Length: 435
Image (cartoon, rainbow, N blue to C red; front, top):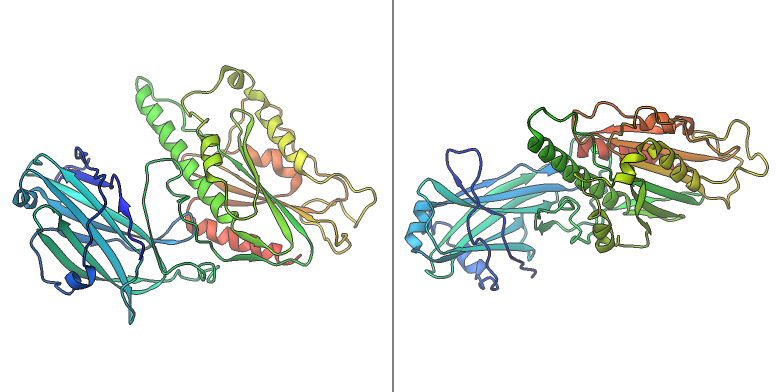
């Protein structure tokens, strides 16, 4: 059994008619959740002492390549009046697969308030879970620890597999259900607290060394609106948070590749500030604390003067970063042709690892007048380059990175959704398994 007490639950007090929610005051509870006799109470499915409204979202694919379902419970303020001025509400949600028993994995979230809400408002509990495809019964128990009042309900949930899934086995080793806590930090979508792993085997005959290079520079928000700098700053911060979340999600997925005959090196960098933030040779779990600390250095609203003055060197920084990681030129030709990305490796030495570059970035616009000379490929060396261009915003239409990468003959994937990332990953894996 793995109950989790959510300290500081995601809980809103909002009017039924207003679009913008109002935050409730003192919505956290520090004490442990109550022991809820779930099996006993869930049998009382018509036991409703507190008015409430339940909703379950359709499953959606997240950037982590897992299906996410959200469970929401709204409690109107008129129901809270039944509890008096002080109450401690807890919501327990559990799932039961068709033909099975209630799963031990569940989540308990709670709140307490010491004042009445306006009549038009409500409290909203939100829990999210990663769920495998299948048919489920969902059990909801809402319980007030002070008054002892409770409400119990059952709902049906169908989670369908993806249509024409290019990676149908990727979730085979995952738990049936994993609840998670949605935070407010930039890494909220990467869920560093989850340690279950996707099944991404990469079996190659030839040794393979993968360089995963991820640019965390905030994407371009467009020109500021005259007379509204505050809105521009909000847009910039929002884009930055969204970009960090997407990049971390991609890192988490790609770092789970199981290379039977190879290695993986991760480099996180900031192209605007021209610095490497984080590096790690993966041998298991990512070093999330160190990565989070490194990313905290990025302030989308503040760039050092030195970085601003030298921004024409951003493209040169990228060239140097890639050139340093490319293999050196071969002493003797290993095959005919120019040896760049896409060439044959039929005569390559079996002992020489194939270098594979995964360059992940939102679109980048270099300073006017910057030297956009391309990275020059090493002579007579076989390698592969994949450019994952993730458009965090539909407004990011222009990208100068392809100009710098063009001589490496990269295979470019334009991505905006987790589905597109999944298809790109499937194609990359299919390519790698040929070596």
